[in-house]
Image 1 (cartoon, helix red, strand yellow):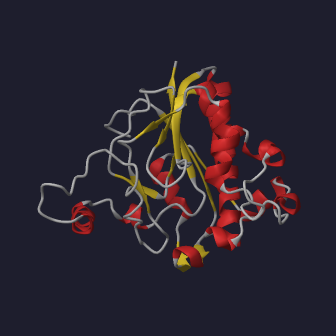
Image 2 (cartoon, one colour):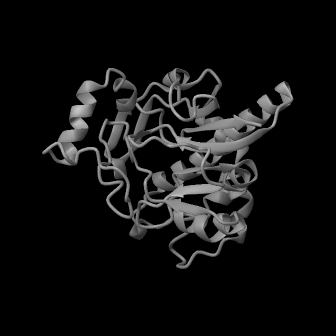
Length: 264
């Protein structure tokens, strides 16, 4: 952000006051986390307690069996709640952006929404494309978005208001994030596109990196090619060479979200 394509953007972030991460699906069993590291990304950050999230959302409604994704689809109850926390995080970081707009009497033209618990090894320029999501993965990718302000507004703001309109393809599928985004959210965004040259990998609280995240439908640069080494060896070489890698090994907790905007 300091020297790349988006160096002229304002950055906002939201995360939770979580010091230990527990998610058996991701092999996170009490993984330590320092939420204040979010301020290394930007001073324009909000840290909320989990209780703040629960008080602002109707959890009794959202935890009805018809919404919760069944284990047969690879999720746990924790996975589902973490998805709701991520949705809330996206809402809150958008609110931070709007507060800045009001206080500075400005209007942002383009918006990018990014997870802060991932390792980006391909530069992303948010100035290109009106509504862009990555193409990698088995289903519609719900982990990143950038584009025009009005399109980003839809991607970021209509999830909770839309849950009662959603009909899952299977009764046990509940609010499965990728299918929900494809059938209810993206259909309201005209001319959204997949970009096959975007890749980033999730980093778990225990330091494990999902090196297979870009296995499917990714057609961008593969930096390990031409070095005579495999992807794992390349990644660990990068890890050793990067003086700031400590911040990657300590992601900003499940559900954290950051946003960058370009002014008019």
